[in-house]
Amino acid sequence: MAVAKLVLAATSGKSSKILLGLRVLAFLATLSAAIVMGLNKETKTFVVGNVGNTPIKATFTAKFQHTPAFVYFVVANAMVSFHNLLMIALQLFGGKTELTGFRLLSIAILDMLNVTLLSAAANAAGFMAEVGKNGNKHARWDKICDRFATYCDHGAGALIAAFAGVVLMLIISAVSISRLVQPNKCSISTTAASTSVVP
Amino acid sequence: MAKLTKRIGALVLRLAAFGAALAALIVMVTSRERASFFAVSLEAKYTDMAAFKYFVIANAVVSVYSFLVLFLPKESLLWKFVVVLDLVMTMLLTSSISAALAVAQVGKKGNANAGWLPICGQVPKFCDQVTGALIAGFVALVLYVLLLLYSLHSVVDPFLLQKS
Image 1 (cartoon, helix red, strand yellow):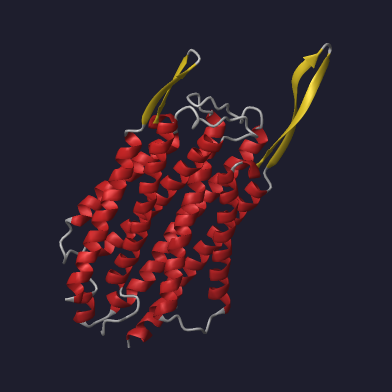
Image 2 (cartoon, one colour; image 1 turned 180 degrees about the horizontal axis):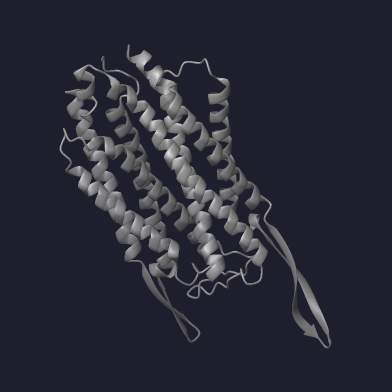
């Protein structure tokens, strides 16, 4: 009886359509963040000195691989977008599979794990980008954004997409958890309702 | 009887998480070192890096929240809200640790491509205390993940173990 209520609540039209839309948005956001940061590279030649009258030029490259936080950012965004892709495929093509209690639980737990992963990645990259943009005069670290403006702009775009993805994933996670709770709320028996409140 | 042991276990876990977050907060705030080389005096404080300030604020929020939840009465309806708040606190903890680790790694190893020199050679005690604070923050994170799983299990009953 409870299993039937669970399946009914989980496959009900409205919440699963909203969830699908949110997942598509989150997939696009995280995928674009991963791609933009993954292709982030800028090469520039600077004049580093003068020997007599001829200037010496040196070529410097700014790549995302130079900063471990950005590498983690790309990997985490790729993982989260892959997770969202799997969930979208499950919802679109697994129409007749019953969403039993354990499957709903595993979806909710995976969503929570991905939310924390994505928030950690976005935050680490955000703070490293802040150091790159403003420098740190206490540690005598020069800022690099005045010299590699395009690199910084692309990085900022990727960060914005990732933070949008974090907000979307948080909402998705809340919706997934609420789909777990729904059958208890709909249940007419009082014992289920009272036992669900006592921790 | 089983419910009582579960409840005591959850309380102990939350107390431990509160302690760990508080320890991370205190160790980071008291990390301070003054070093002088050549004629320049350099003082390293946690407020020098924005990521460390965020770490302190996040751990303060988590400590206050854990302390308040310790006193939540058993039959309160707020326990369902505690699940969502536990998730938000876990997110705060992971993001603060991740950001502080990213910046601390640059402080320890430097970044040759950007021309940033490591500073741990000049202020080793500051680096050690920051490392200790990060370890305490990581312990708080692990405890919070366990707490999140426990709250989800107790409030939502996902395995439908209780007969309706």
